[in-house]
Amino acid sequence: MGMASHDAYVLLISGEDYLPFLDGLSTNHVIGSCTSVFTDRAAKIIDVCEIIDLGTQAAVIGYGPHKNALLNHLSSRILGQKININDISNLNRVYVGDGEDSPPEGTTIHQSYLGVFWVVPIKHQWEPTWSADDWNEYRVLETIPFHGYEIIPKYHPLACGLGDLIHQNKGCYIGQEVLTRMRSRGKQGHQLVRVENPAASATTVGSTHSLCIVRVQ
Image (cartoon, rainbow, N blue to C red; front, side, top):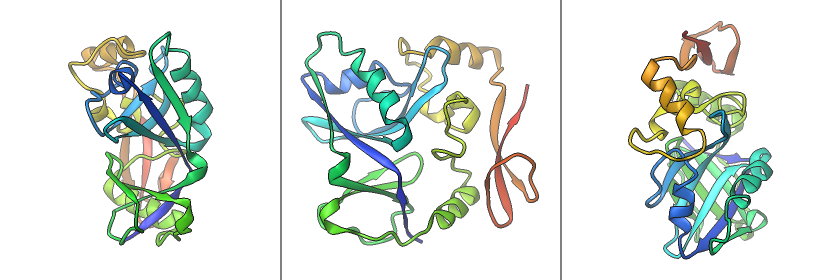
């Protein structure tokens, strides 16, 4: 049981309508803290983010290599709204796991769809108790997709096990028409599965099982 280091960025989104702004661009209803997906017009993943409502602003935690893509996606759609975006990645470290460790003082704890996330102020220099291999083994056992493995820009959210993050009654976000059409026609193309080893084309390899994204139609 433990927490692993996560290559993450942390953005602060503030302004009069910070939650409605995020809600209008993401696949999930953003009325408070949640996990959601930002997609492009082809419904491919820009990033999967943890949105933590802090009361007067929101912390948005995403995957480090996808930061510029998400910043461009958000910034280009402010369009006169009173929204501010500040990058505070250098002030924090992010960890992910099962949340069984004791966090340092001042840690923000978020129950994500993908696991438990800790945002730890960098001053604590806290060391992870899980390696990347430990986290991957846990993910395989629980069939949890993750950044850089199953969650990559070539896939849409339905293909990599994120269907629960696409709200059935939510519309008007970028990529919504494509995802709705896939669901209504029952043609999502690929899906995430856990299979016994050895596994061909595994996205994450565990000790006895692996995660794979396989074609279903």
